Image 1 (cartoon, one colour):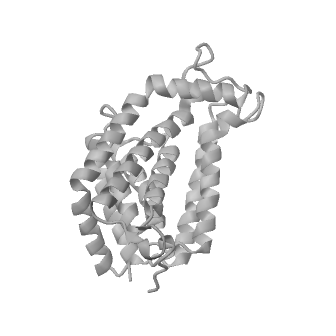
Image 2 (cartoon, rainbow, N blue to C red):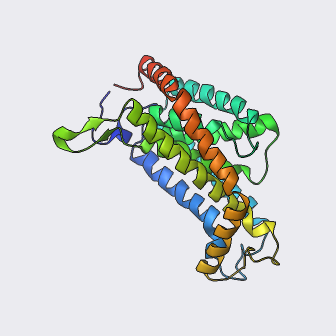
Length: 276
């Protein structure tokens, strides 16, 4: 297999990211951003404005988009070994998530998503995030209108981990990111992703949660700056402690288990010939 050293996301991985899959991921992500950010974009009286069915409609769109991604992945050469690895890690994530999910913001599954995306690449990380949250919801009875948003948010976490640089510097000064430096990179990314995930989830239900009577409520048709200010204030006073707890949990998880898990996953990747 050919490795493209200066563009590691194009290298031979469990899920090869070719042009077709790249386009699919960009389109799905664009739809996802619209699904999350529509409260800040629509005018008063728009079809989506104030309609409690909007998340359901957009969830269906997201589900269809994820199906397109799965089709594109099959075209790109995702073989049975990658499917087996995806199923195994998604099952592990689904089993460990109920152990702490929602308990003061503790979220252990982010450690798996970050490390899995790092080893197996962005395409695999995207699928790992979505399938893990979906499997977890089925296991715990947590299926609802929030699930597509959670799946997409977790998919982005895995995707971002796979896009982190494997080398830093330029020319002869370029060095591989390994050892302690890699763990610091993954922990920093995991902390940032944990906070952003919480903010994104807030945005998905904030317009419907408070009604119109509070100073941090969604105002249909208001200026973007007005609604953004209200939303950020809402996030700070309600979910920030949980988001920070999730970030701390992820950092500790990567610091404690990161090295062992990375070694194990990379050994599995070599045996499955996911890497050259």
